[in-house]
Image 1 (tube, rainbow, N blue to C red):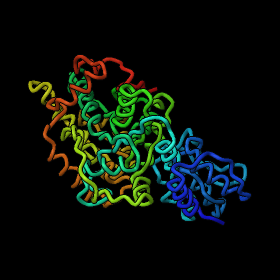
Image 2 (image 1 turned 120 degrees about the vertical axis):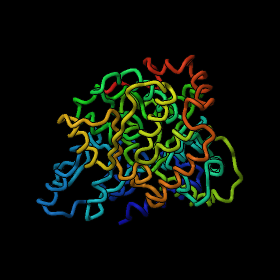
Image 3 (image 1 turned 180 degrees about the vertical axis):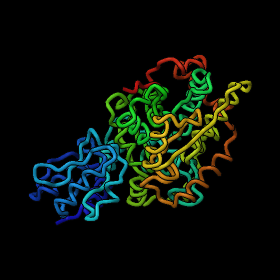
Length: 417
């Protein structure tokens, strides 16, 4: 029986050779291979985590396994095997790590992405997460990485950090408007889909303290489609949970596909592209604030500094608390519910270390954090308030003033229910 990894490698190789696989019905007799082909060709039909074989655990082990999911997405199907509920799965990836039989893995979007790059009559944009710095090859910055994606056939690569700038500005404006008493507090709505999923599904009573904002990924996808209506958008990052976020019904208009860093690395490998050997293609417009989003505390620091630039005379300044990893986030949210509120701005990241500690990073977390802050130090502008490219982009998108970010918009706003 062909393993999932062997099937994946074979189909990706064939896709490069054929310049994008055409959709065709599987003639394979093995039902698991048919299922795996469908998972690879049509990831949108499946949860961000997929099962790639029959469960071999005991009944007691299966019950324990199903009960461990933080989002109640695991259940026993009619055959008694563990299955994943696509509506509940947040893509945290914990079950993949915990499965001793290694029968769970993350969904992969690489085949439909390659088909779009090679066959679609539309521009395809790569949207790279702020955690990208030196993930693929040491010393490769955004300029050579942009060249690499263009060599693959993408129209352009955009740094999502620029949209982290815009969402930082929006959150800072929200704080300046809403935090007027010592007992007021705000929970960040930026960046981490696991943090938002926890609040929406487990700590729903705290929703009024979360600004109605999309993530930088969604903002980037929507902005690209606003400026280039036929564009196909592909987010690339270290996170499985972004695959789940991209499919949420109220924001599914923004991002067509989500690749992990590992999937992007596989594309470079099969295409025999070495980003370090390519010429630079400069186009860096993000501030330090947007670039440091990838590490725990980065969002808090960005919002704090931007609030200070917006209103240096505020009597109530930003006092932050952060948590990273799902258990720590749940503990912090429980403390807030229990009235143990000591700060006025709370940031949660689903992975220890932040995005640089995500399940599909290619380098150690501490190295990733150091790289992100080094890249932030290279930025010309310290905050989005200082970044003229933010103002220029907002004007292109129909915003005459930054204060209009507080108004409901089709690009940067979502309603949490």
